[in-house]
Length: 299
Image (cartoon, rainbow, N blue to C red; front, side, top):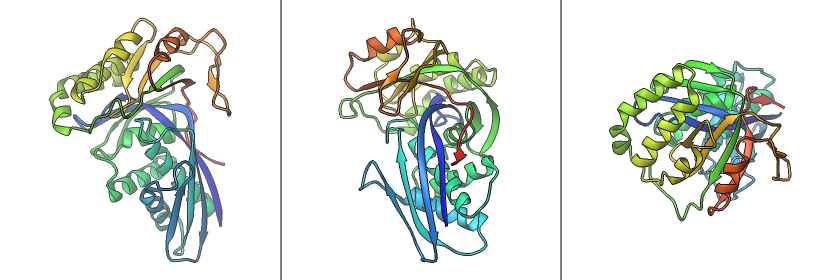
């Protein structure tokens, strides 16, 4: 039995480490999962971009989805391939989990409720210990599209709205910039996180991002100068997740997108073009994409 599905990467509006409330938005970067179910007793996972990658999350997603949507016990294989950079703060784990749950449901001939499927992926992430907060904010944006605000302690979706933004992503050399998720330091910026949550729930996502980015860059010992450099050119800018990527957004000015070859087709109309030229002078990768409001899907 064969199944295939796609889920999206995402950027951060509010990091949930401080208060348990988080917010994220989906971007046009896809992770594809392919699942083959059979009568074997185990699930074997692989990641196209890294033969040595930890596959416990996607394997656990298959197991939970089979328990939820299947009538019999199955093993098999799961393989992911992705445009979302791994370990860069762009929600690659959430995208892989969502795509895997949907692909398993597809193999079983089921069209699941996407919010419920999202929670299965979050449970799998907790089961294998790859998340501190449960990451329902990241997972919900990846699965549902648009901008979401969530209570990660209760896996509750507080709001979801479509957003139409150009998005600029800068991912620095991780050897030059690295930070551990220091929960104690993040707790110190809880008053700022509460303000960010108020802004996000009021639909003021871009302002929320900027406050979040400055607060959590300081808490996690990341440089703030990329964000400061972005402010004249972007509506909002933030450290994404616990880094190292920084994301900036502006109202959509053109059909900017990343092509299949990895090149950017943005003409000269993107409001983030000038910032892209500035960030491109930094070490690392700079790329322009857009938000997505359609979310994950079975393919």
